[in-house]
Amino acid sequence: MAGRSAVILNQLGPAVGERIAAHPSRPIVLAHEVGRAPWEVPAGVEVLLTRPLIGWEEAPATRPAGWGDGLRWIQSASTGMDFYPPWLLDGAPVVTCARGVSAVAIADYVMTAILTFEKQWDAIRLQGPEDWRRKTLGSLSGKRLGLAGFGAIGRAITERALAFGMSVGAPRRSRWDEPEAGVEPFGRLEDLAAASDHLVLALPLTAATRGLVGAHLLAQAKPGLHLVNVARGALVDQHVLLAAIDSGRIAGATLDVTDPEPLPAGHPFYRYPSIRLTPHVSWSAPDFEQRLADRILANLDAYARGAPLRDVVDTATGY
Image (cartoon, rainbow, N blue to C red; front, side, top):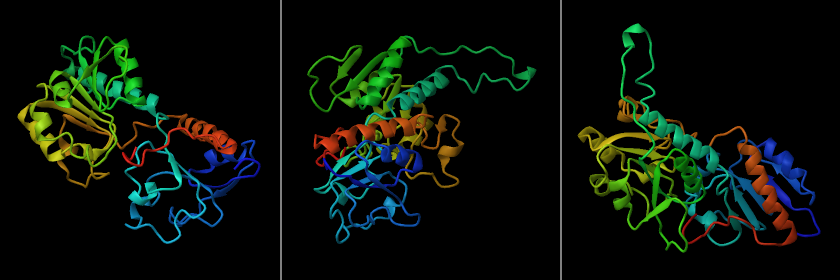
């Protein structure tokens, strides 16, 4: 650590790698070899910079022999850790995530989804004079936005929603030590769904949250609810969601995530006009790699000094 150069395996690409290599601690940055499994870390590496969807889904169910030998710190480019095998979080090394790096981009996506829904943006687009007819459009002002998940993403969404005159509510897993400005606390997610016009899912996927949006919750939702999922597809029982839309209970859904991704050809979500699917891009922004590198460099500063790292993943909760 302090006084010597850390050996870092970079699986995040050259843009991040170049910035990490320029750190004053003069780390030795190794590039990930194409075709090599992400868990196959060369001897001598003490820091691993990694991300989902580069082969972790093919990881063995049990920890490979020798895994983690010499590793002191793993940094993920994602906030959620459900893409990785459980043994990644099993003991040493310390694992940190990119909590909040994409909060602004995701909040912008959420507000775009809500505005598109309320203003019927697709329906009022003219293809010719025969389409010229007036419609009464919705408004954000006075509507309630429910946030299932109130971390950095929830706070960024709240800032934007309040500017549009929306009221915001959120349940908390832990007690509200201090009031959040402009946010009404709810004891149960069911109560929040019953009071909300738009419900946004920004929760980690864990054993406790898998299938959270199912028949019980949707049966209590406010009629005409618009569901927005920017978290993980498996939070939602997709069959139940279709039934709730067919019944008219749920007016529509904007889904940036599904289970699986992508959905297979012929899946009914593709043909439902009240469901808008996007290809897991809510996090995307031109400055994402810059923000991610900034976060890693801040942690590398701490690592070089032997100080505590930021955004350490809780191995008990998995996020």
